Length: 209
Image (tube, rainbow, N blue to C red):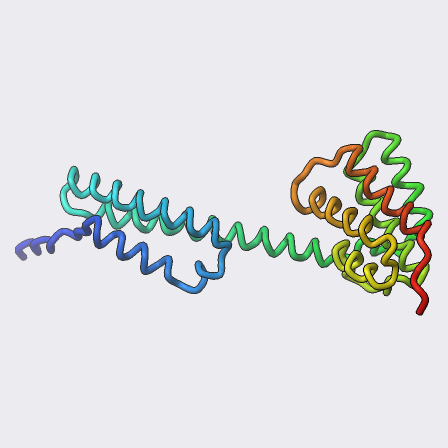
C-alpha cells in the first residue's frame, strides 16, 4: 500500500496570531478581570505574539510553532488573570470579616494593644487598637454590633452618632485599611493615630437623640 502523502503544513502568520489572541481576550472572563492587569497583559501578549510568531514562521518549516506560541501565551494569561481574581476574592472576604469575631471587651483589646506596642509589634498593635475602638463604640451603643462590620463602615456610622470624634475615627479607619489591606508597613505613627482615635472617642460625648 503506497504511503499517504502528508497534508499541507499548518501555517499561521503574525496577523492571524494577533487575531486569535484578540479573540481570546474578548471573552467575558477576561473583561471581568482587574482592568490594569488585563490591559498590561493584553498589550504584552499581542506584542510578543507578533514578534515570536514572525520569528518562528520565518525560521522553521511551516508555522505549527507559531500556533504553539499563541496557545502557550494565552494559557499564561489565563493563569495570571485567575490568580488576580482569586486574590481579589480573598481580599474581599478579609474585608467582610468582623473586626472582633470573639466578643472580647474593648478593655481587653486595649490591654493587648498596649502589650503589642510595648513589645515592638506595630502591626498587631494597629489591629488591636482598631478593635478596641470599634468595640468601645459598640459597648456605648454608638455603633450597632454586627458581624462583618469594617473599619470604614464604623467610621461612617460615627459621623452621626459621635460627630465630635468623627474626624479622628475616620483617620484611624483609613490608617487601618492602609496597613492591613494596602500593604503599608505599620509604624509607631500609625499605632499612635489609632490609639489617639480611641482616646478621642472615649472622651467625646454623643449627640443628644
